[in-house]
Length: 153
Image (cartoon, rainbow, N blue to C red; front, side, top):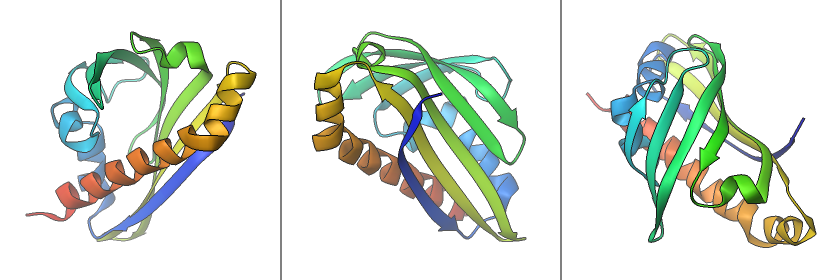
């Protein structure tokens, strides 16, 4: 099992069902994840895959992920199947998780976690010096985007 590397959370003033509809909608993924340009596939089917065209600060590529855990309106866990950007060479057993916790009928806590194991000593150093911080910033932006989309309308 890989190690928890990054964890962010937010409280959103929207019901669980509205947030769930956003985080499982493939068409909204480019609005949720700042690195995604375009996405195809499935985001609400166990063992389904999604493929994302990515742009990470000018570095373009694709990433294919599989939904390996799905508890409706509570949890999604994605693992990387393949990518053209080198992430799967640097990190092993990578998983991205969303957890939703109902606070009341109109308020939800959302948690975003990233698990992985650096593939070698150099990547472990890079992880400690910059990768965790970078990943945390991306997760924070993702949660901000989910909050904005969920609380509008």
